[in-house]
Amino acid sequence: MIPDEDSCPVSDSLLGRLYRSRPEGLAVLVKTVPPQLRAELAVYCYRRAHLQSIGLAIASSCTANHLYFYAGLAGLELHKRAAEAAAPDPIQPRTV
Image (cartoon, rainbow, N blue to C red; front, side, top):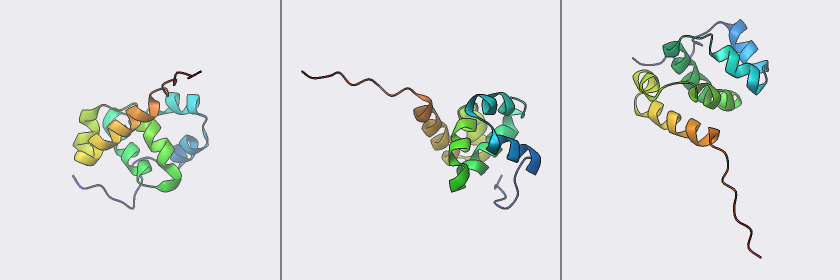
């Protein structure tokens, strides 16, 4: 399947709500989107500079399989980046 770069996989209304939501609200809202459509939406958002952070947040709720199905190796890379972005920063030991 080749993604259609011009059309958003969800309604403009839902995309607007995702764009305006806070991180905790985004997580709740994303769960209302079916898994395969969520993967498509993650890729759609990530490919747009102003929506990249939303794309990463959505991708973090997707399985690697769904992202791979929709975007191939690029989907797997997105899954990896989303996991890295979601991981807490390691605390560096202080040297005295």
